[in-house]
Length: 333
Image (cartoon, rainbow, N blue to C red; front, side):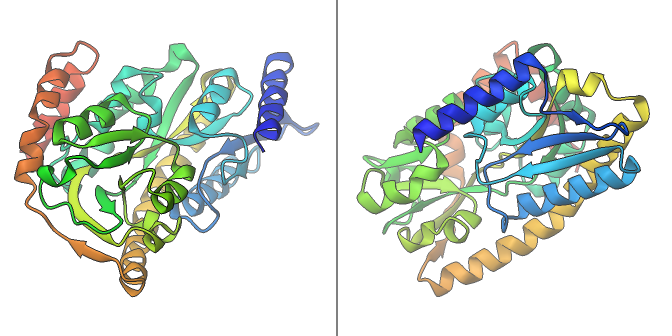
């Protein structure tokens, strides 16, 4: 499997370097673009990306078509970001945490308790502040188009609720490959273990890790609820998924096509909000039937533990301005 993936990567990179052929223009001028992501066809993100593809074709009168490649077919998140930079892949949906190693400003979204709640989160994600973040990566080869709600991230373990940061002492907790997420677990007293999402089920099953942190769909869509029976609503982060596009491919579109794609992106994000909420409700119901217990700890001790991170982000040059704007938005409710 690894050899096949390496071969696929080489082919994609070669295609991007030699002819940028991931974007296919037919004889009638129709442009076909490839969009990669790592979720299954049943996941709400895939449904929302399908809606984005439908809307794009509709709004461009068939001039631009999107082909979806789900299930990590074209690589893990870091790989598809690199492929999007080169143009071997036109678009990709990735976690904001995965973008952190490409642009430090995206580390903001992994900052625990950045948002005070869902109203604050949506107000910020639909603001000019985030549009500025989307455009900040143009020089490194890609731009953001929109976001898809990834819910709140919470702790889940095999057999122990996490009701206080002290409960994490001595526990190996899987985190995304994000320096901010790693630091968060360290401040809370746990042992952070970065690994790809696809490895989590087996790692939990075999005791390589004691727990993980993610939204409720991980319990059902990825079957983590079969081995992790305690889910604790620490609600320590709201990390969005981001739809990114190769900058060079964006630049060759005409203004009408750009406007259509932007509209399709925004509307697919609104569509996602609905299907996401439905998916969360169903995941909770199905998980309870599988014996998962849900707990709600007091969040104040967790918030207190990560205050040093907030101080760092408020002072760091790359994030200070955005951090200030995001936190000020919390006061406008």
